[in-house]
Length: 227
Image (cartoon, rainbow, N blue to C red; front, side):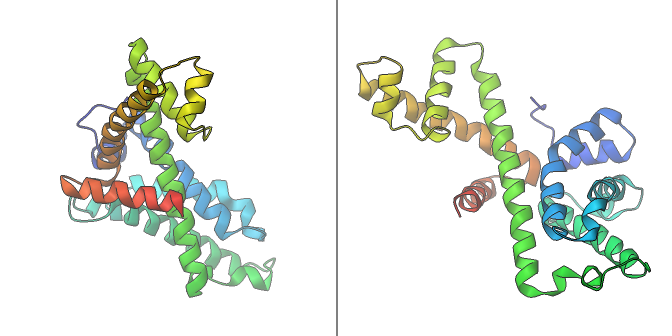
């Protein structure tokens, strides 16, 4: 698990200073939403062949000296929105380059985010991939924290059976050969509270949010995944 004091900003600062470990953490944390955005933006287009190159360009933009993320002030901006802006600008740069190529197809020379409905769809793809990435990290943190305690590991297992497999609590009790359904329900409720702690920590780390704003971001993440 990441150190409790580590945030998206501290990782970014270390990565921009050339720290290889920080760059690995940064890339691992944000690869999925960037790839999902570019895959959706260039789906069915000649530019799809450049997704991997564009992803690398996004990370270069993030790390470079004097770049937008280096100039950003922690606590005074939405990190997700800044990262989305970098990915969008890199995509547009590739589209400009493609439009000037004699091998281009006319449909590939269009800036897709100039179409309002397409811009909304692309933003939503990025946001949902971002939300799934944060949720997965929270599940991993919860799993790791539960591993050394058999009772906590059982609660984690119950929670995953409920949410990943969609089993009702009564069905979970039957699978565990547990006659005390009410007891299993109490374990499930406790596991939800434990998971919420890890989710809040992950959201705070990746958004820079504090206090009540963390809860607002958690609700937003949950709504994105439910929609």
